[in-house]
Image 1 (tube, rainbow, N blue to C red):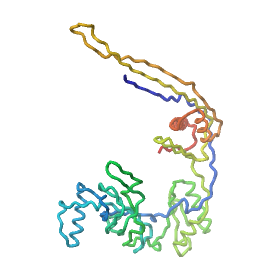
Image 2 (image 1 turned 180 degrees about the vertical axis):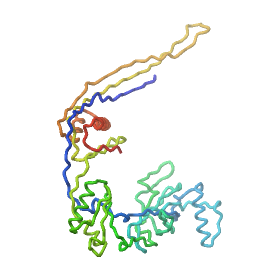
Image 3 (image 1 turned 90 degrees about the vertical axis):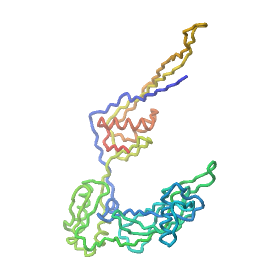
Image 4 (image 1 turned 30 degrees about the horizontal axis):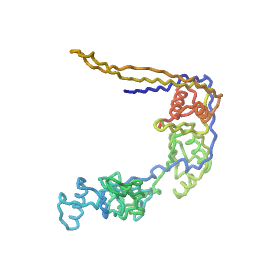
Length: 373
């Protein structure tokens, strides 16, 4: 007997009135440093390749050929000649080493590095990273890393009975990297300091420029676009660029966060701002369940029949069930939280709520940005 079940979730109707309510978001006071960064002052990714040694039989197997080739190259530089194709060592593992080079990094400064296996090693527990040069996006070596690994997980047992916690093939070396090249920016050579907003907004850019000009009593800053504000260093009268940046970053401005609803259809997660408002809206939600059942019966030929055949005859039984629709009504200016609470009382699932919010936005009843993650 075969059984097929089809379920259709119907959003019967969503009606949104023509009137629109534009809620004004409440202003919040923040520091300039909390919503901006300095152009050119940022972290830079570093990556390197090496091997981890000292593993207890949990390293790469023979089929990971680049591990043994790397070991042979290292041994050759140390004066030991070994054929790479005949080496079988389970105590080493090939790894990529990653780190983040902070702004104004000076030579000799320490970095935390992350070590990740790239072969078929089972665990890096107890391993030691051999010297790994760390390259920047331009291919130059900016740091070097070496040292014993610390892991946040483990693996134990054999092939048929084993237990694993977290990821034993990824480890860290606190302060395991050392900066070898000075990447600090010479601020004394700058003629302009550029502030970059983390979230583009013309109003916030204008507010920052205005508060800077009021602080210094003259127009030293200009708004370039919705994200960048340029400050003229020579016009500020402050001889030290770090002092100028410090004064600007500690200024306070009033910002109006945008109304936004972020939804994730895959997980049914909904995150909303407190200032998101709706127009007067009515939501009608119902469901229809259609069940199709197929049964098979055997039709046999008559006794002593010469040309008779035994055949399987399918028989289908269709049943449809429709539950009564449930509705909610919200007044003008209602919040998304009130809508979701009402939908939950109706028995709507998280994914139903996501579909309803999308329909309300399409009809013009949701006065916020709807971001689909």
